[in-house]
Structure formats: structure tokens, C-alpha cells
Length: 389
Image (cartoon, rainbow, N blue to C red; front, side, top):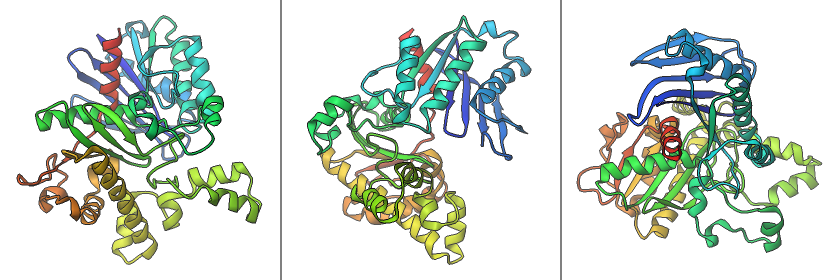
């Protein structure tokens, strides 16, 4: 069975055609920088990578481009050959603890939850509705980023605010990147040689989160009610004193919308450096003596180490730590800074292997194994959809 997976991000769209149960990715595509002049389509077929500049104004056009690429590369003759589509949906709230077949109620709930994930649920929904229009007879399924974190206990997901806000408005920690964290936990388990393990998975990119996992289940994670909480990220602030937004509103007469824009789009690595949120560019600037770029990198590493240390304690000792995502997989210098903060955990790693971004970077005598594992959300979505149907 060939499953088409649509993974719509805030400004990109990843997709894959995956043969199940072989778990074979036939095509992998990425429409990057949607709405910008530098937008491009990158395709990977049989190990060959093709790159083309494209003008793509929104996620609807991106989905159309993705579907057309299947025809142009002769992977299908007609759209009728696509029987199943699996979509990544960022926020499922407390509605969904597992993948579901998409119907009018699911669409309504995804739209309703867009206010909690304004950068992601609308593009997710655009992908679903576009596929519904072009592929009217195809079954569609939603796999939620929040679902994996539904095992987090109440003492970890509740906030210290009046309980009535949870009852009335469902304000609680939901967690995100669950599809990635679930995939990473499975892959790390294979490397450890055991499925029931205590591990910390770090999904580090423009959006970042860290999850504590015990026996294959999430027990705590850094992102909270929205994807803004936790680590400092590319343009998001991460956790901060809740009185800061109130202070700014009172002092500078910012509106709630202004504050949302500042914390979501103008903070994090970009806000500190004033130059860029790209980790590669920050490294170059830092190496040239740019103090703010160096500070941004130091702050990021410190926060990562802070959460790893706390989760190590909560788990009663992690057996492995996994790094993934664009930063986690490639920024060896960030990992090195993190390890320098965690000397109390007696981590031992091979500096050469770390710089080469090898899969196993810990030494044989390290009590805690250190892994660099590329994530594959598309494959994880295909697996979950196939299991459901």
C-alpha cells in the first residue's frame, strides 16, 4: 500500500510517498520558503536529489505542486491511484490521543484549535482541504503532534493557575513534536537493544523541544499550552517570567497582538543576535567575534542542558540522550557546549565523532549513551496510519 504523507509546516511543506508495510520511501519532497522569492522544491527519488526554484504563494499551491510531482516523476498515472493520505496536525488538544480518520468533526476541531497553534494548524488544515478537493474519494487521516504527550501525568501537565481555567478553557501543557519524539524513541531503543528504557529526546531546529520518555511513553516535555513554551528557539522566546508580557503592555502600551508577534516571531536566537535565527550563520558570526551571536548560542546550549539535567533527575537516570532536528543533527558545536554544562552527569563522548555528526557519539564506557539520529516524521506518520487502517 502506498501512503502519501503531507507534513505542512508554518512556511514549508514536506511530503513523502511511502510503501507500507515495507517502510520504503519512494519519494521525498520539500517545498521550502513558501511565499518567499527563494522558494524551491527539493525532491529525493532513489537517492537522487533534484532542486528547482518555484513560485509558491501558499500551502494550497504547495500541495498542488506536491501532487503534480508524483505524476511528473511517473510514480502515478492518475490521482485515483492515491488511496490514503496521512497528515501531520500539530495541535489535537484533548480531543485526540491517537490518529483518526478525517471527517467534518475532525476538521472543525482542527480549525477550533488553530488559536492555540496559529503558525501550524491553519497550514495543516489547508493541506487537508486541498487534498479533499483534488482527491475526493481518498481516505485521509490525521496524526497529531500532541497525541504522544497525552501520557504525561497531571502533576506535570497542569499549571499553577486556578483549576477552573483547565475546566473551562482546557489550559494545560499539551506538548508538541510528538511524532518526531515517538520515532526517535523507537530508533534509540533499537540502538540500546531494549524498548523499555529511560531516555531524553531532543528535537532541535527552528522550533525545539525536549522530551523525557520512560518505557516508550512521554512523561514530560518542554513545550506547553502552545509551541512557544520551553526552550529558546529560532524566533520564539521559550519560557519566561509571565509578568514580562504584562509589564510590556503596561509600560510600552503594546497590544496582546503585538506581544504575540514579538514572542513568536521576533525573539529567540533572532531576538538576541539581532541578525539571524540560522544556527550556521550564528556560528560564523560568533567565530568572527560577534558577541550577541555568541550569546545566543550560549543561551541555547544552557537551556538545553538545563532541561536535560532536570529530566535526567525526573527519570531517575536517563540511559540515553538523543539529538535530532536541523540543529540537533548538524550543530556539533551546540552539542559540545551542552555537554560542557552536564559534566555532573559523567557524560563521555568522542570529540571527533561528535564533529562528524556520527550516530553514536558517546564512548563505550559512558554510562549514558549519546545518539545523533535523523528524524523521519513522514515515515512515523505512515506507520501510524497503516496501523490504524
